[in-house]
Image (cartoon, rainbow, N blue to C red; front, side, top):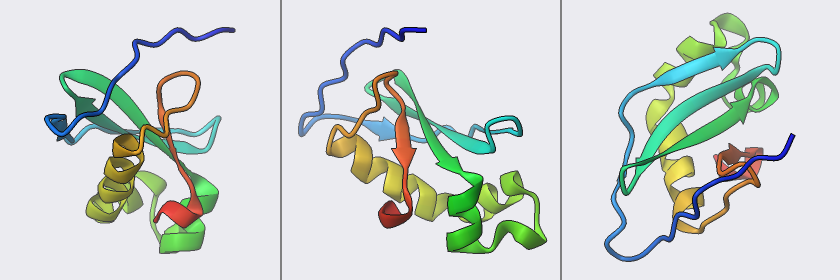
Amino acid sequence: MQFNRKKITITDDTVIHFPGYESWNSMAEMATVAADVNKERVLCRVSLNILEDKFGVMDETPIRCVAHHRAVIQEAARRLIQSESFEDDGSILIRSGDL
């Protein structure tokens, strides 16, 4: 499957907003946090392994972990968006070193 995405160009005037939407995909073991970048939706993903390594998600559900550590995850996503580190499908993948 090939993904097409609209190119988002980051400038000094770029507005990045996190509307507070998150979801959990148990098949992919991936949490997704939504970001709006100049009114375009960007999905910011972080894996269960990263959540476990960084935040010890074992004691709580992954989505609760994301909600509890939202500020840290959003800041990592913001840095990746600002550096235009988009995946081929237009999403952002947050890795261990990003948190």
